[in-house]
Structure formats: C-alpha cells, structure tokens
Image (cartoon, rainbow, N blue to C red):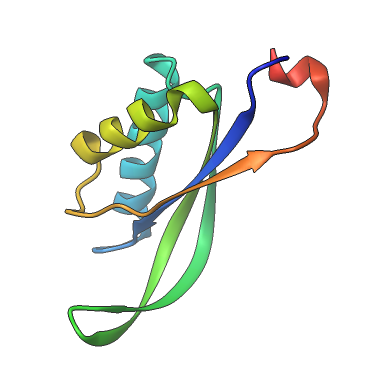
Length: 106
C-alpha cells in the first residue's frame, strides 16, 4: 500500500508588511523543498486570520503555506519548521489526503 500523502497547512504572520512576509514564506518554502521535506509548497497570500493569543483577540494578514509531504516526513517537517519559522509556535495542521492524482503522488 502506498504511503499516505499529507498537506500541512502553515500560517506565517504578515508582521511588518507583505513584501517582507512574502520573502520569508518563500525562503521557508524553498528550504523545505530543497531538503526534500516537502514535494511542493503553495504560498497563498491575502489570508486574514482571527484568533486568541496571550489572552487577546488578534486579527492578522498572513501568508498560508500549503505544504505537501508524505506521512513519514510530517514529524521531521514540523521539527524543521520550528527552526526556520520566526514564531515561537508555528501552526501546523496535518490533513491526510484520501485520494488524488496518482502520478502527482510519486
């Protein structure tokens, strides 16, 4: 049975402006692909997120990274994100893919 593929959604706060944020997101994406922790990383700009952090409601613009990997790399990918991401606690949500184009999974 082939290994299950995963999308790991990752949010990066816009912080000091979209240009800087886009560059950081691109750097993270390139690192993960170059190190073969991800087969592909989609960078989605213009995401608005509302959440609670340190007891206060926050509303931020973010670049969402959709990171495509396999199940056996999820833990390693998450650990690597902790070293390349500027946040203390980057958000990772691993979503199993139950079906998809077989050729793209190779």
